[in-house]
Image 1: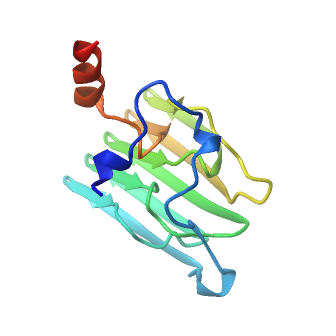
Image 2 (image 1 turned 120 degrees about the vertical axis):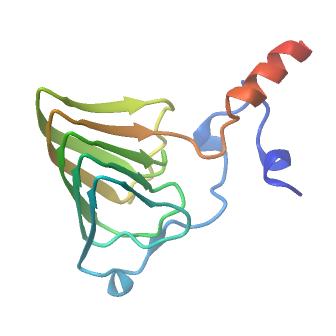
Image 3 (image 1 turned 60 degrees about the vertical axis):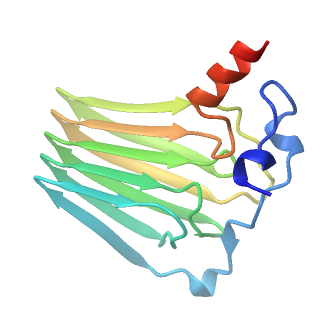
Length: 161
């Protein structure tokens, strides 16, 4: 069965009714304390199956950083992401199974949280605390469903109707 065949049809079922494909939560003893990424005049990305530490620091100077947590392993409790962006761009994609808190400030820039899906929290869902400062930069946190149909699939579904 392919990934596309496993996706629900548009307009069916709520996120909370679907069972997650795998567990995002790992035991706390396997979670590293800190890590990070620095981007100067370039691009950095963290995506796929990776391990989010308790503290993840991001510095972007005239660069672009993309952090995709939709397949990341996360420890129970709270994990923090600290961001400093100057003349750059930082995008963070969070799955709806994780709670997210965003605080930050922007000076001639943007610090934004976008929720594209209704989060379905479990009582013991891990918390991702995101804090940052952008100076003439863009920081965007997006709560997205990784199993949702993309724009092309939605368009073809509408054309078939």
